[in-house]
Image (cartoon, rainbow, N blue to C red; front, side, top):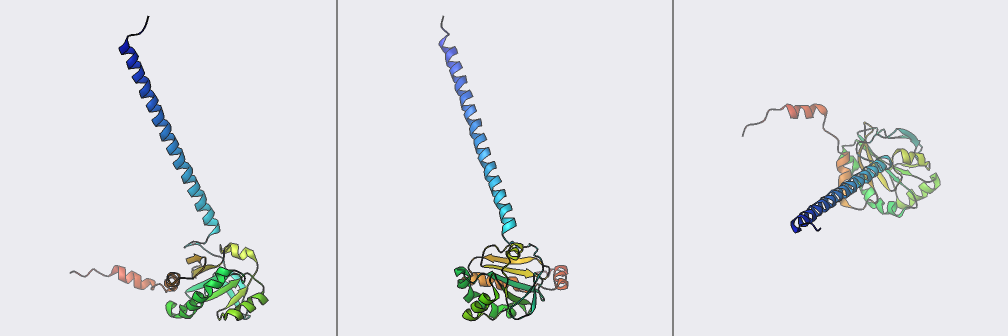
Amino acid sequence: MSSPPDIETSASRSGQRLLWAALLVATALVVALAWQVGRLRSDQQWLVDRVTQPYVGMYVPRVALQSLDGRQRELGQPPGDSQVVFFFTTTCPHCRASLPQLKLAASQLQAASGGGAELIGVAFATPEQTRRYADEHRLEFPLIAHDDRRTSALFRARKVPSLLVIGRDGRVRYHHVGAINSKQTLQELMRAVRPAPPRSAVQTALAAPAVPR
């Protein structure tokens, strides 16, 4: 005995609906899983960057080192308002390509910072190599020869060239990793060393009544 045609048609339609519903659920699950995997990868990359790359607001340690001129310098503790630290090697082509803009920055630093910034170069090389490099490229700012890579790890300067602007509070104001070969980077650096207005001036400006138009 065979089933009536209308019953078979109804059963077929119900089966198709169930199949489409299952496909939609499976598709939604795949999309949700892909989104979750992408988010996990993004979070993982963020964590990797956080522990290997410098970032604005990062605290840096204080490291006392001697520059080639015999003076004691303290990285991470600017004597004035800010400290610009340029990490490099004497064999890095990108470091060499950064020197024209860096020397230009050195000549403009005092005016931009109101005399409150200093520039220090840290070479991961021997003192002899660093002196030859400084003479060859006519570098007139203080240089430190320091080949201990633990210091580069402390300042997240594993890649060179690496430039940090450190405030008097020991936190990074600005960072740039890679060749310094554009006017934009120079302008960003000059803005980073610009002294902040006194706190009293900021409070006075915030407390000032609005002028009616």
